[in-house]
Image (tube, rainbow, N blue to C red; front, side):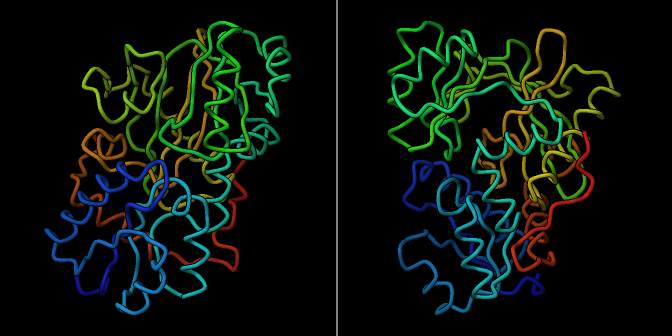
Length: 317
């Protein structure tokens, strides 16, 4: 695997998703080393860029979840240093991490996403209930792994949900709750991997359901017809390209009771833990974990424009 040169698996960091990132990165590092790649783990601290330069790394396998690693900051710094990296560029990373602007782009393109309202202070809570109804979900605008998210069933719980989200981000919004099945589509290059239907006894697919409990059920096959699953994969690819994302990632959906899918969010550095969805979908497609890590590493050879990725013209709904 000498073509890759010396590879830094960048993980950890100081954000809310540090533990998940360390878990993901440890697994990725072991997989690359098992395939003969000269890979080294680099815990992202304040001296990250200095370490990458001084240690002579040729490319970065980015598994730094959340703030700093998934929002375009690391991508921009690496482009300045001319160090190739995996996954989406600056634009796609920044837009996918900004859940609010991501939804605004999808809506402008006529793609389904749940109704929403920005919450600027406690006074907005009553208006949100009047506009969106109950239940609803409250989200910080720039976090991943469901950090700071709350499902709200009654009006009295909304102010506390708003305050929790605001602990993580100054941008907070409420979203109409879609009652129905939850799906996720993992993407590898231009391929939509098998859809996974998620089922959890918890209020929603939250941080614990994703990483700490064994009660979440993952349905592959997902139960959709072949044509419906193919259509969902096409929507995921269009949504991903619409925000300039590329390489690999995941797009999440809720379907209403009539079966209409609604876009929730896109993820450009999804988890790679033993509970994570992209490795599950890849395995169902015949790609084992080690091979998946190599294929993602190959995305570091992508040509990028001055601003990172360029959105595809293929974004019509």
